[in-house]
Amino acid sequence: MPAAGPGERIWVLEDVPFRCTPPGSRYFRGIRAYAYVGPQLPAHLEMFASKAYSYARWTEDELNGVRSRGAQAAPKTPRPLQIEGARGIASAYKSGWRGILVSDDMGVGKTGTAVLGAKAICHLGGGNTILVTVDRPARITIPAWRDAIAAYGGDGGFRWLIMSSDQLKKLLGPNGQPRFHFDVVINDEAHQFRHITSDRTRYMRRINKLSAPPQKAPFVISLTATPGHHPGEYTYLSSLLAQIHGESSAAWADLGARLVDIGLPLEPGWDKGKWQWNAEAKQSPALQTKAVTVVREWMENTDPPVILHRDAPWGPAPIDGLPVDFTAEQWASYNQDWAEFRTEMRLARTGRDTARGRAALIRFRQKASLLRAPQTAELVAATVERGYQVLVATELTTTAADPVAELLEAQGIGVSRIFGGGDLENERLRFQRGQNPVVVFNTASAINLQASEMFTDGTYASSTPRVGFFHQPRYSGIAARQTIGRAHRDGQVCPWSLIYAAGTVEESAARTMIDRLLVTATSVDGDISALEAIAKLFDADWLPASALDE
Image (cartoon, rainbow, N blue to C red; front, side):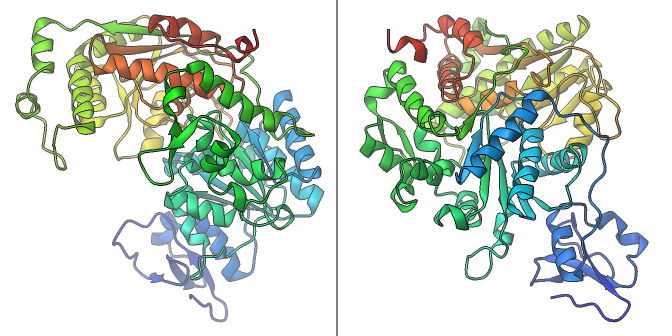
């Protein structure tokens, strides 16, 4: 552990490059970080100085026995929905519930709602410590939360810690138990904890003390507009569901098994600890609707409710399908052997590079998205000419994001690349300020790309209307719904189009994406009116919850 002598203090450094020891500092295993000890932080180390609410700052304050100044940002006035939401959070806390799910539509203001609600809980209960867990990319999500805390009235005099879910292990001691007690935990994008066997979920469960009685555990505010593809993925809510039923947390630790006992149509998945719809439910969207409605109503019917959902006042995002017909030449390339196709397209070998089973599906998706890149680039360029700023959502990099971006740049169109490495926040800001009319990205959540976003200095993003294109259909309804919310938020309408190659594996992926979008929307009783139209394009046999009793 670092120790300060007379007239000295400790500076814990952050963002130190891998295998780089800044001159004058050293790595301390006790805090799992680099630190400098001295009377003043040298100028050459200022770039590594800790930031407000970071793990480095938290540790630094612990070591020095002082509390540093919080972050500063231009103030934001909470919307009525955010104030109403904070009251709902406080009511759940006062009534003895151990947590609440805030499932508002993307852009309604869940972040501000949670900040206000967490401070209200600390005022009511005398607490002082608040943990915020965020999803990737941390270089964007952590600063966004830091700015939100500062903008919505400041930190309130409480100690805040913002951490990526991938770094939660730092909060556990050698015995695997939490090193700190938090009075409130905000799990942003809580669906990232849906797989119970993942490291991030195991660490979260310990830090949130999900196995402890409610009075000995933090109050947990779970934020997500997409709780899961089915109720078996609501694992981060297992202790809350146990409390609703008056049962022990242990009885609900294996959530999927408990839901099967109750009668929900689930079965063990292909991987240990995962669950999926059973055969009957897979063939019946109506049965899926009924199951997610049952679980949602458990949370809605408590007093007060422990689920909070508000549809976007500006309506759902318009979405339509854009099938692309391959030419004879494209069909020939699509049906080529993978090795020949890779050689012809000059794609590097990666991993085992096989093309059997599940891998074959990925290979055909790669082929289709790469072959369609010119059509997508042409469509995007035409949309830019019509006066819009354009979002292009991808999943794969080499065969989707890179070729689309390169084709657009070859036409002289500026493209922000939010994929791979580099300074992602700078890329985002170049798009937001209108310097680049196009952004190509594969980050599905926790970034803002909407028109007229308010920055920390009080200035605003460009007001140019946004239009979004899915260059690749996503198998994940969660990722698709989150992607739509990157620009359709804060009162800004962003229509989306789903592009796919007709008659290929992409058409099947598009159908799956729409089906799962409908499930995720229904799980929170969201507005599915915009999805019903595109569902008809794929002949989806979907029934809204309201039709089940008819």
